[in-house]
Length: 571
Image (cartoon, rainbow, N blue to C red):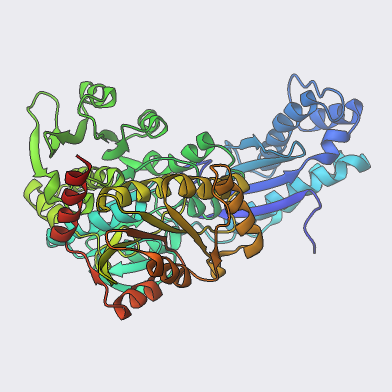
């Protein structure tokens, strides 16, 4: 039997989600019939479901839309109550489309909960026909007689879990935390956008930043400590696969993936990310970016203790959190320092000794390092082990593949630097450019290969072109054929070029692959230049190309020397 016309989507969320801290059903419903119904028909509908103080308003008016939100929420409760379920929580939200709304409610029995969702839509289908009374009764009977179905499979962890979310820095931070836990002698399992790792070994490649990744890590019988990267998409499409975490980390919230799955603004995106600290256990720790107001605001919705990180030791966020009995990690006199109420700062490790910070140059990786140190300490790992882990985690293909990986390549007359980074949005690109500027030799150039994933908004794609053209000396486009997601390369070219033209750069060349783009830029590079590549689709191929052309990874010492030489020349 086909789904009711009013049912746009029925999604089963397997665990904590945007709407509830437990498994839920999310319905997207077309309310066109209710919106267009006469006031008399809408009034009869309100009476049948016992909606108090109903004022339906005129058809297709703003008042009618507000009425519809209340009425559909009440309809769900009425069907549930008449079918024998009491005290059902229901959340109803508008969408960008005035004729569509989202309804969510928790579920304990999968099949019955889905039957209720379809039954709600069938009642909305019946509104134009005028037989609401009969349809509500039939919907109630259908739910009452439906087989219960399976219970939720949300996992209750039996080992410590650190859950990491945020727009940028999730993967780097989760890798650093896992590395520190390994240094503590734990057998660590972690899941991220690259795959599932057990004790440092990749056991399954793929994007496992959703609930299935966490589930597979925790199902491993030998795992003693779990680190889960929790992405926006997993929360929205499946829910979080765990009932709780012991430590949560929110790195930041910035523009990315807007316009997808009903998330159109930064505030809405922050609400999604905020699900992770909401399920941190009482007595655990929520590690929050004190320099990001949307992240800091999550301290009001977490049951956990709050631990903030900030590059600024004078940050008001640090003062407020310490006054409330929390903790903080910051940078004082070039040292990563831990702050507790009523105690002097504890200098953990000099920032220059943390390779991921690129001698303190990478602002984002300073923040990632502060976040990782905070989370590891919050999870009970000793300070000396945390310092050791920070000192031994490197920005290379072994420890942090695809994130700020630096190389030296020979060219005629000397050498150039090359850096590969995901840099998948505006903030990531600006961070990449900041680092490239900090390692280039005095008087040399930045050559940048840019590219985007096709499901980003037009505005974001144009901004990638604008930022690149504004801050780099030479730019080129390298396409990601596997990630076009409904767009054509010609369309992406036009958008990125339009952004570049806003800052006076025209004629930006395009290449079919990331490696082709890298090859073209290195071919133009002169001694001392820095070549950067926003690398997503061909990371291993780019590594191989660099090796074939006698390139070598930069050690922390080499990177520090490049930073020092660049700063010395600038001074």
